[in-house]
Image (spheres, rainbow, N blue to C red):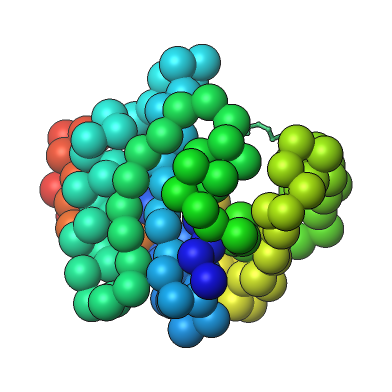
Length: 160
Ligand code: PNS
């Protein structure tokens, strides 16, 4: 079974990586799919994010990295994937994630959303939190893969 793990990944965090690793144990193939979103001004370009994810997941045999635009379910159907994989951190995620899952179900009845509860140590973690900490000069070494932390410090011209 193929699972699509869609998201912005600006940048990938250890929380995302945890979901990818666990997804890889559950599904034959996990496609990490970066949304090309013209409505957002990201810290990293899609190319940079794809490269960050590629390096972060190089230890996993059944992962693929791609980008897409438009509807996630259309992309999932194009890839003949049966599952959309999402991580759930806290109650605060639940409403938006449930709405997204229901909406996607109305668009493609055969594509199932599977939620994995994030591990406890990542339950507070998001790309936005990482960017906020780095912006004010804090260390993000414990929140993202090491090479991603270096990319972030380079953006903020701060050495670790
Ligand atoms: O990492 P994010 O920003 O939480 O990911 C959100 C994402 C990319 C999964 C979501 O915004 C999405 O699927 N966007 C594509 C457009 C779409 O399919 N919308 C319908 C679902 S409501």
